[in-house]
Amino acid sequence: MLSMLNWRRDPDYERRKMQHEWRMRQIDERTKQLENETEQLRQENAKGRQLLAKIDALCFPPESSSIPAIATEPGSKPSSP
Image (cartoon, rainbow, N blue to C red; front, side, top):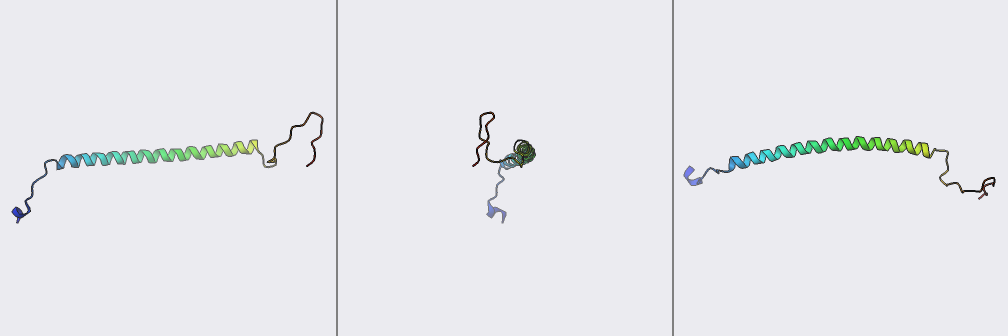
């Protein structure tokens, strides 16, 4: 029966297998690195959003108008709309 299969050992099988395993380890390491970088960026983005919210609160308090004030000459009264 074995003679019917005409089976021969592939001489490069072990080398290809080792290369494949090495590539898989590299991919796993790179995936972990990217996950760490992604998490770091998420944290930095969250800090940035917090800083922007603080800046907005300081520069544009809720009681301020969204319409900019019209520049007037000193001593003059603003015109009513």
